[in-house]
Amino acid sequence: MSELTKRKNDPEGLKKRIIAGALKAFAEFGMQGARLEQIAEHAQTTKRMVVYHFGSKEQLYIEVLEQVYQQIRQHETGLNLAAMAPELAMTRLVEASFDYHVAHPDFMRLVCSENLLRGRYISQSPQIKALNRSALDLLDDILARGQQQGVFTADVQTIDVHRLISSICVHHVSNRYTFNALFSPDNSEEESIRRNRQLAVTATLRYIRK
Image (tube, rainbow, N blue to C red; front, side):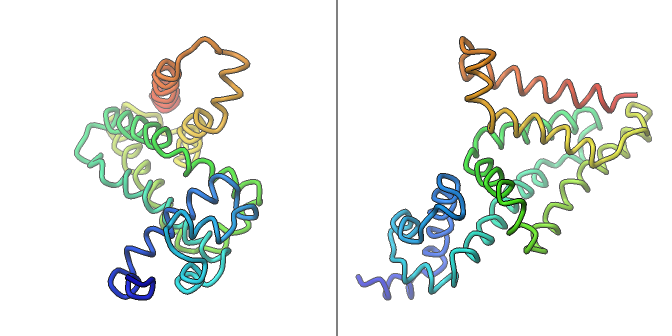
């Protein structure tokens, strides 16, 4: 079957493979270091087809950024946190966020790469800004319910709680090799995950409790 026939039969499948291949390449080499030929090889297609569907490497990179942020926000909104008591909801959100970062290291590498580029491409996507509003909306709801019930202090800002949760989740993935080598070389990966997951929950709850 020719490449043209494959595209006609399953163009969406091909685009998904290209996105997945691009995520691997961008996570490994950064936007500037990744090559379209590498992405095409990951996706089992050709450079021509990558350009056909996405136009340029820069546009593909932005679409990959949009995809990974959409996936983590969908993961959070699917937790049904509104049905849980505030402290349980916050605990579940922190645990789920930590687990997501551990399970998706390419997401974290991509975010680190974009920060090295000083946010050059993420700032070009209004979609990402809109998507990430849901992260604050979730926290707003949990905090407001906890404040109404008298279990959370009113003296906290939603963005600060989000930064606190994100900082521990991100640090575990982005700094685990250097941090473990310097401070806890005898710890197993399982032990590091357990300790840091609990640290994220404990730090967040102590920060917001009344």
